Length: 361
Image (cartoon, rainbow, N blue to C red):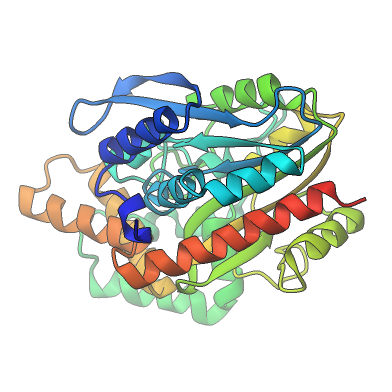
């Protein structure tokens, strides 16, 4: 089977393949059903598959679809790993259980959106909402420009954004836009005002499967940042020297961190991995986001803006809707054999390294 066979053209197809692969390997899936339906009226679910001894002290989490439409790449990787008998045997022999969480945000996956049905960026939603949300005054200044009244945007809109970048710099602009904001529910990178369905469900999954483990690794699969087909290994733990040292020992010296500016990602608020510290406090945790590049950042950014405009303009013509939805999918999923091969090969390497890291002392 070629790598491309593990990838899909829709959420429904991806889920069907995932469930079929589980059945073929004799593994049980627990499906956490989403309250809404998909774009083709299909059921939506966060599907969870546990592969390994129930009493394993070591566990590796491999998750896909935190950002909905990014699930095309992540689901393909999960299926490739599940179909690899040698990989599964190596994990079991090492005493490592593998927890596959398929489509953490199934709504976004199905509807080709990066956000949840609440228009929330799930990777900005893991905030303690009993406390005031973080402020992002730079985003406040940009909010009206980022999602303008009309699409395509006017020349004045484009010039205003360019002026902001020229004044504040590319890095500062990226941080302002993508770092997370909590005041504009119809804007980009909105962190929400309460835990989303996916947030609450993921915590339930972590409690069920993680509380009896001593060491936990996590590879969270993402797309959309960096050079095409290259998987950046972004440190996904608290800003602690010991955790960063472990991540480097597991995944090599090219592990990057937003904390020291070495990553293509800005420092983000309310990240998903932070839940592991609450739900599995007994475990030593080490994780990365494996972020695969697709298109140049400017094109990805424009696709996000267009899709957010479309979300608040349901009156848009069918032709415009089709173009924007294709644009957003292409920004996060490169549907070529070469890209898929690159993605799978790098993921398999990272997964094997994680196994070795978990068993090392």
